[in-house]
Length: 89
Image 1 (cartoon, rainbow, N blue to C red):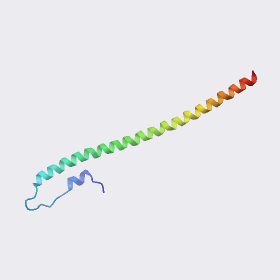
Image 2 (tube, rainbow, N blue to C red):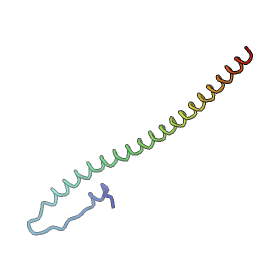
Image 3 (tube, rainbow, N blue to C red):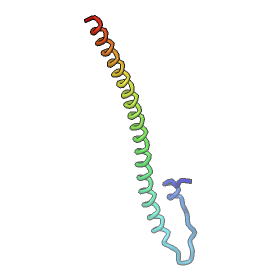
Image 4 (cartoon, one colour):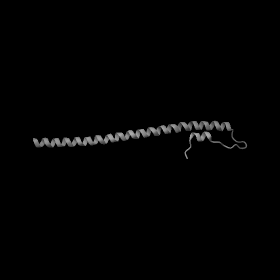
């Protein structure tokens, strides 16, 4: 299960004899959770950007295919026109 910022914030620890200072642990966990949340959000933003760029790439690849097909069609038309001109000459 992936860890989320809220998991860090809500994590509780048992205290033991001569345990850590609870306030220091809480402060540190808040700092870790804040940094984790920033990274988590940045990662999400980059995933969305990557998906958007993939969609744009697909559009350009589709456009490339259309342009290639049009070029082949134009070459065939030019060849047909040359053949027709040579026959008529």
